[in-house]
Length: 210
Length: 210
DNA sequence: GTCTATAAAAGGATAGAC
DNA sequence: GTCTATCCTTTTATAGAC
Image 1: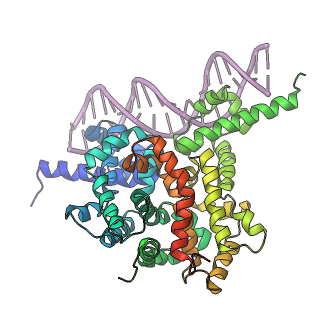
Image 2: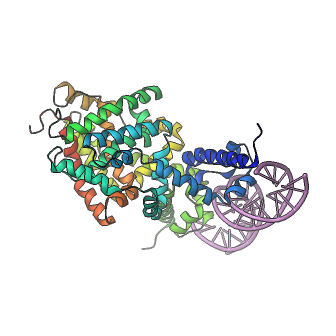
Image 3: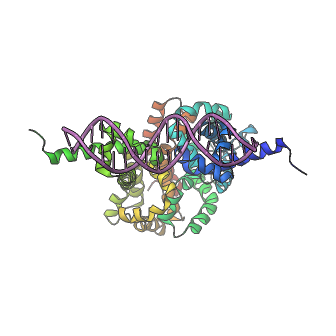
């Protein structure tokens, strides 16, 4: 069966987006080159502009997707309405572990670009439909009912995210600083899924063994 | 008293380095413009090249300094030879709190650029005179003598650094996600110096109150 | 829709006067 | 040591043929 034009459009656009994603994610907006994106996609520059008009617009498209991917299963948990604090922590860690295994450059990319244009954040957060208040409430409830030690719920959330993401953001640095080889660091990251959960629980749970 | 030529050299070079630091630190190598650095320094592009020949060389100079600044008082502690685990943790947190208050873009800059040229790390680590093994040993000792729960000492170090740095690396994101204003976030970062120490101690110390 | 060729602009680097 | 003017390469973007 031969593809019709509609399919071809879809394919090429998809191809470009995939390529642009790889290049932007690794090199950032300023470091990326339209030529390199075209090469990766197996087409030429002119076609890039035909589909997305400008580097800026192409980047915008890529970045929005990246930003939304940046929040893994936090939503999945809050969706249900009432989730336990342990579920929340596990969901965040597991979610990041999963997405970061596939897209290790994602957090450095998102965070790096946001540093350069912080004015976009408000809008991006709105568009992504993320509800920080809901998540904060889950933590606050756990504190109120004595499950978790008294602390600023936002701080706990920051800590969870920090511990999940940082080893990926600073991967080359941390890896060559403390580990013998890339492979060993990878296996550390695997085990870490459990150890970081325990690290957090030891710190915050009033009754760890309950 | 009139300045002689020697002074003038020094001043201009200093001026350029200051300007280059601001621009590179904020925009990264790819995003920085020689023109902007010249403007910030109050001179013209030609003079930049007169002093540093190329963008690459100027950047290299800036980055080396930034990298060395990235490791605050860890050294200060290990210098003494035998430091307690509590001292180590406090030293790292305090050190970062101090340097990051002055140079909030530093960690994102260092980590970001290292992601793009990881091959440089080995050499930079050597040149900086940092001794990861010494630091690991301090933690290992604390584990061996039963002060700290059993865990990979490297993981604890990663966690300490992560918790210290992440709120700065991801400042705009975290700030507008969980806080009402920039000012409130700043005051959170201040208080955090203590709370993060407690967070860590609760998790790792066998006898927290000792 | 896709290509080649080329325009147009930006940015790094140098020549040469003072 | 510092400046103006200019070169040259890179990179984004468009025109026009197929």
